[in-house]
Length: 199
Image (tube, rainbow, N blue to C red; front, top):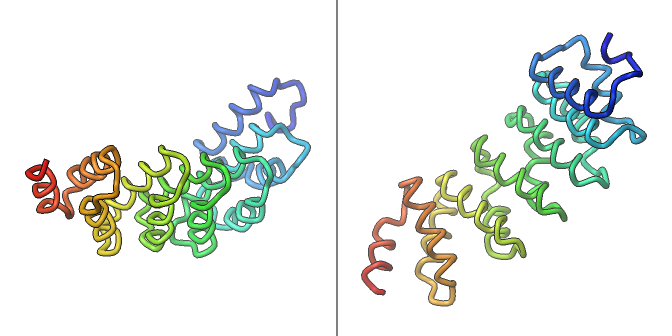
């Protein structure tokens, strides 16, 4: 009934979208799909509808969300990744999350990088390493290091250790890598000691 009302303010409709996902109100799924896909709708209302479609845990939400990942609004793309994060074992969802690591907008990249860490998506490792090496945003590089360390793969650990040993890598970068390696405690202990004693 609330969804059909036309006297709600935009903030009230935004909050309604959030609540429906948290309540997993499955009877509103189709209406949320319509809202998420409506390009005339307020962008924040669409964003929260996308996130709620994921929170409902209905797998048929995946093609709806993936189908709108080409949206021009980076905020919507970010929230589509939030929605897809609820389906890390669905091939389409996982592929889109990994693709988002290379998105043109840093907030979308950040969401994807944090999601692969939280959902243990090890297939993302080559993309994380690429962003750690090449991203123009410091926060993305740092989040990439954190995700690489948390995912604990041979490829990722070897990369982080090689960064510690590379004399061309800045001290600030090495400091961040030491932090994430110590936090996760999977690799790099010997190299960290060597680095500390060489100063």
